[in-house]
Amino acid sequence: MYRAHRAISLLSCYMLQAKTTYVPLVNAVRRKLCIAINQMNTKPFADVTLLLARVLVSLLMLHHGIEKLSDVDGFTSFIVDNYFSYLPFDHSYWTRLAAYTQIFGSFFLIIGIFTRASLLGLSSTMLFALVFHFSDTGLQGAPLGIVDAHNYEFEASSLYLLLYALMLVFGSGGYSLIAAVRSKISDSILRWIV
Image 1: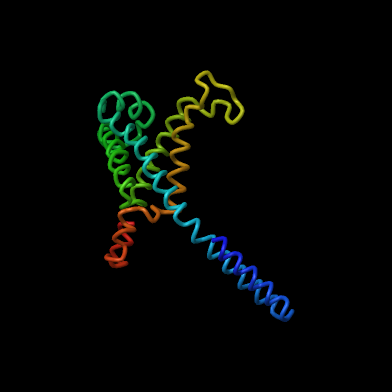
Image 2: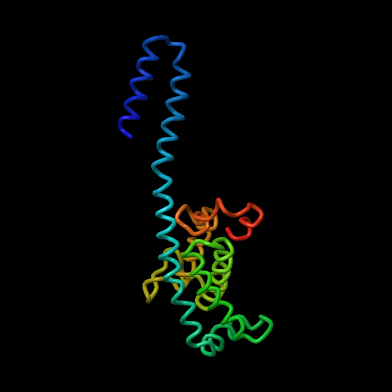
């Protein structure tokens, strides 16, 4: 990379000395080459960062889904019945739906397929978690309030939602199952599984 920058600098210095009419052209070429070099260096870093974020966030969320399935009746009676009584159907259905969304959504997010659909499902569970926390404890004086537990009750679900929103925007990155098979799938099918 250093050699490329040095070659560009030498070329531009030579052009500047040869004729002053080349200055705008040299600056434009130099700018485009520098942008291209920077993009080559940041793409793998961004892909690794997205991979780590997908894996770590999913492993943490997996716990919440398994926890719900371990005590469906308890979660249903304490959370869903008390705070979401307006939901139709048997309330244990919603507990199982949230749990399976957190488990399968996390799995798909880790391997990098159905990423955006998984993120939408996981984001919806976090929106319900935020509704619960705000109904239960309110804002707790955020952002400057000091609380007994040293963190706001809604912090975790807010951070999950923020990370899911960012991943929804940036996609699964280059290190994912969908990136590996992208060239083998037609665009009409690819649209539904990205």
